[in-house]
Amino acid sequence: MTSLISNTTPHNKDTLYAQTHEAVGAFQFDESVVAVFPDMIQRSVPGYQTILAGIGELTQQHAQNNSNLYDLGCALGAATLTMRRKVEDKNCQIIAIDNSEAMIKRAKEHLHAYHSDVPVQLHCADMTKTSIENASVVVINFTLQFIDPEQREILIKTIYQGLNPGGILILSEKLHFTDSALQERIEHLHLQFKRANGYSELEISQKRSSLENVLITDTEQDHLTRFRNAGFQSAGIWFQAYNFASFLAIKTA
Ligand code: GEK
Image 1 (cartoon, rainbow, N blue to C red):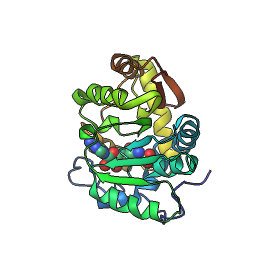
Image 2: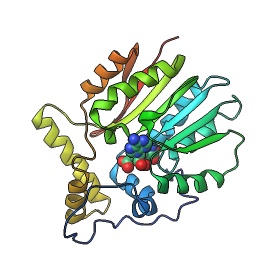
Image 3: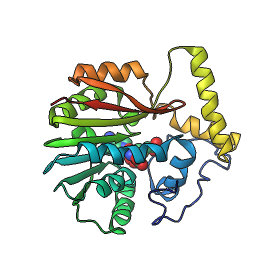
Image 4: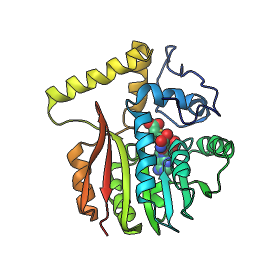
């Protein structure tokens, strides 16, 4: 499958950690990351393209007429693009939010490169401070893991309250496992995935250091408990590749 944003982005190869860094700083979504982001996420997240395709399908099934669709932590707008293609005739608007100015600037270019009558509002803002209203579909694709763990429950509650009956939340995350043998084996599969995609041992270890205390994973159970506490009547994993999973949570009508 080709990348959903490959037509507008020359696929700059991610070599950010290819050279030895004296001190590896905390990972930031700045211009250097933006420049290589499609390649980076494609080579680091197993199942990324399948999840984007599923987001499109789920959006088509659940988008309600005259409602808002949200893409929280939109990065370059890959999920926004796939949602936009699937809701041509429903009078919906998409609200896409990211707190990195560099991401939002580049996302604007991607979105303008394709024609669509579906309006998209792109905001550079903190998703934990965004109000959610009249929503039928909310997507958080690999971003909750970057939010302060203490704020995650409040955010999921805010989303539940802003969803219309029948609305859905699609949440994709990297997971960890409480069973240490399982954790070790599945993490190894992910490592092999990165190696097979051309990342060297140096790149893998420097990237891991930079993400320490920045990307903080939960378990499947943490997510399910949070959905239930927020009020979601149904929730579960609809896609998983190794330690990367996407949940569907439904506010029943
Ligand atoms: C995709 N969803 O391609 N508020 C808003 N945005 C934030 C916040 C915050 N508090 N914290 C981090 N971000 C995309 C991929 S990337 C995933 C999402 C990854 C943003 C951050 O700037 C970055 O653009 C995004 O979350 C995470 O489907 O890099 O693994």
